[in-house]
Amino acid sequence: MPTAASARAPARPAASERRWWPWLKRGALWAFLLGVGWLIVRQARTIEWDEVLDALQALPLALVAAAAALAAFSFALYTTFDLLGRHLTGHGLRAPTVMGVAFISYAFNLNFGSLVGGVAFRYRLYSRLGLRASDITRVLGFSMLTNWIGYLLVAGAAFALSPLALPPEWRIDSGGLRVLGVVLAAVALGYLLLCAFAGGRSMTVRGHALEVPSLRMGALQLLLSAANWSLMGAIVWLLLQGRVDYPQVLAVLLVAAVAGVITHVPAGLGVLEAVFVALLSHRVPQAPLLGALLAYRAVYYLLPLVVAVMLYGVTEWRARHRHKT
Image (cartoon, rainbow, N blue to C red; front, top):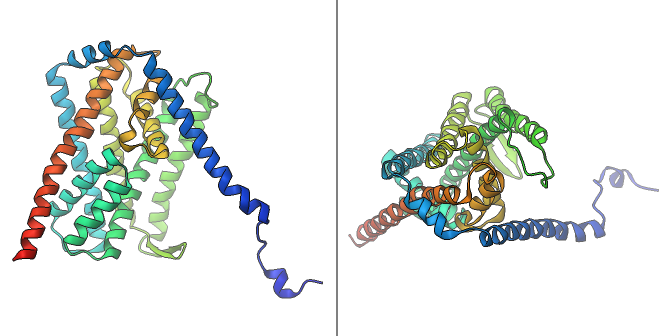
């Protein structure tokens, strides 16, 4: 007969369940990776790369310069995420210094993945500037939250109001994408409600105390991040020279962003192009489509990385100089 203590004890998963669940998750991840890899290889074999390079060279220089200016504005917006974290933690670093750290981290994050850029560079740079590990963690977490809460809002609006015409072999149609959009937007708005009713309070999640921001701070997060994601879509739309409506381009970019995060491929190499070709090649010839995406990589990934490498070199030199003196 069970005792009272045993009756109150939570049920533990069966040993067999504990064994197969991790393998199931790994298997699903590897299946997704192999599927994306197969899609990239299949499409790469059908592409006339000479035509792609011709399409890239045919882009007007003024158009590429305008795209680079939008990219600079987008990076500037992203650096404000760390400024919000500065306000949240109350640390004393100057705003230009914080924006410089965020810029360097974001550029390396885009090209080498979040563990290298978003995490490692922030910890190294902020710790050299005297921030405590706890404050760095809070700034990092708040920046990531800002980025993805804005994503939910923009993706929700894009999927719900202008759903994509998905390929027939995909297991979700436009109606399903519209439902997904409503759910994503509801989550983003739910975050605002949480800020409105629980702002300033602390919540414990898996043993970590998290402070719920105020409604004003939550609204700033949504506004800045949504503007940044919208700018990224505008850059691709501009380089495509209006061949596809902006909401459609933005929706495809948002799908590609999640695919790149899931696959953990540095810079999303091949993933971005595979998603765009799969979803837009029926509306835009492959050569100009891939030419526009290569130009996007140049102005949004490679050019900022060059600047970030130089800034990082200056930062390291100054840090060593301070230690010597």
